[in-house]
Image 1 (cartoon, helix red, strand yellow):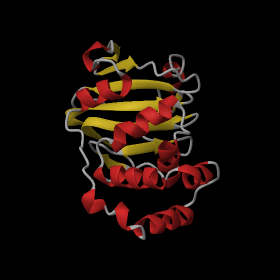
Image 2 (image 1 turned 135 degrees about the vertical axis):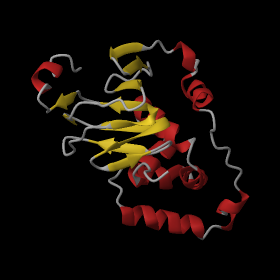
Image 3 (image 1 turned 120 degrees about the vertical axis):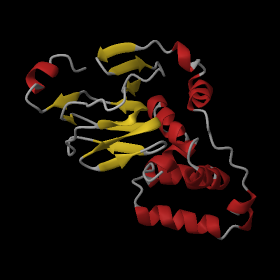
Length: 212
């Protein structure tokens, strides 16, 4: 697991100030990542005004490191004493987060090798969906009109930016152009978007007619 939520997202998640959709996707990563679970536990230990003050302002790496230094100076935040139950079954993890059985999400085929299922988390600003890619499935070249946050639940994919595996938290926006290709084992991921994709390849004008 190489890619994690930004310091600001972790702080806002711990403070409970994220939207339902963003809280869902961050939780999907945190439940699989012992590093971020430890950080979250420490942030929650600090509690109260400290977290809210950081969450209500722009958080940079320096302020995040400052907060972590305060945590490290507190002996009761020793990570060696933390009991961190990592999620090993993403279907059970999904059910715990949204209180709905994974097998009942309602898959819809959107292409020969790609299925999707929309997840209702009562968030009017963002769309949440689970995407399931068959082995070696290719997604057409595209960028994003807004933000896309993805957490991989099973399998992996590669694109121009590298390889992304189970648990990785990926943030894409209009500055990124890529053409993901699922691994030989396929890929299942959760995606939260606040705007449609914009296809840029040869078939872009046609595909964009069907983009949300």
